[in-house]
Amino acid sequence: MAFQIAILGAGDLGRRVAQQRIAAGDAVATLRRRPLAMPEGVQAVAGDLSQVEDLKRLPSAPDWLVFCATPDARNETAYRRLYVEGLAKACEVLQPKRCLLVSSTAVYGQDAGGWVDETSPAVAESFNGRVLREAERQNQIHSGNRVLRLSGITGPGRHMLINKALLGEGIANAWSNRIHIDDAASALSHLLDLRDPEPLWIASDDLPALQIDVANWIRAGHGLPALPPFAQAPTGRRIANTRLKASGWQPAFPTYRDSYALPGV
Image (cartoon, rainbow, N blue to C red; front, side):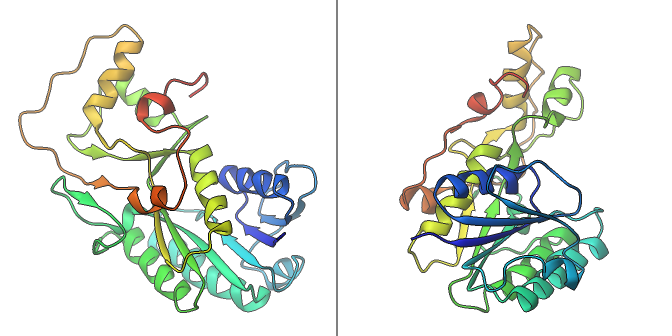
């Protein structure tokens, strides 16, 4: 069965989802503030999701609204304007049958190194975690809607940890969790097809790792000596992808070694 899909916030992630859905035979329309080349067959709209007239340029009542926009600033006002007010306006104008909201594992506040999954309490005190949880609750009011929480995205152009590792600076004594951009897109696409009542999902790779271990693996690949280990116990949390994998999804980049081994990454 072919879907009519509207993707709001069609940046790197949204473009990859659009490509997968076009290949699956769906009709796809995207909305993005700044123009970005889209796969052939995509109805690409340049506009602002805060503007009703721009939203009305998209097909009404799509089978799926995929909300993967990112805020234009890292503060609570920008997050609330996008995730709470923007999501509500988009759903009011477009009247989608179902909505898939892309959220983040930043909603979790656990910091003692334990495992976290969809059943774990999401009680982050950071402004982004709090606002995302509010948007999630708003989205989950409607039956059939889904939320996908992504861990830290890796892939082309994302060099922050690589640069820190090579400099040997800014490496935290903490657990880290990541997902390659291609796996994030495939997880999103997978959930659109999945006939499952679960409203909440997590996407992360198979191997949470201490940040210093990842950094030392990167350094070894560049012929640099290992950084010394930390004496104290690490902070952070380990994200489990058990539910998503049990539904049939598999990551193409199951560990940080796969993510960071690609040219240009």
